[in-house]
Image (cartoon, rainbow, N blue to C red; front, top):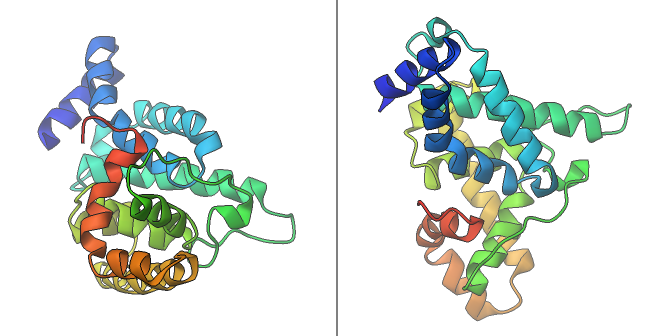
Length: 207
């Protein structure tokens, strides 16, 4: 698929709209979900701006980086630029400190059959952005740690730390939000399972 992505991108840049649409369709659900879990009101615009940025990319610039890792890196940059415009002039958005709601994002919209999924979506959005991204790329997109490192432009060891600390922060948020001991135990006891089930709650019927 990686070779196909690069070939589709090259054809798109040469004016092949049909192959460009194929590349778009292949990744639209994941990129749209990436933004819906953080800043839902701007998700459509940010999804479009991400693909516009990709359309201008010379495939040679990818080097050895997997296309998907680069794509999510572009999405992250679009997200950070947007969040920084929403912060007060005397503050700079720090993705290791600030969550999307800290910059004024509206609550995430979830279609969930299980109470655990709704609570987990709220808890995820309340994490500092880079912790949220690392967890979602790992659990939602099933990306290897090396690819997540490419997306975040951080060393592999740093990404491992983000995932470990992110899980701890997520447990703390869940403990704060859970209204009962039973609900808390059902999520924390099987957090990997609930994280893996989350993509279906974000309206992606192809996961």
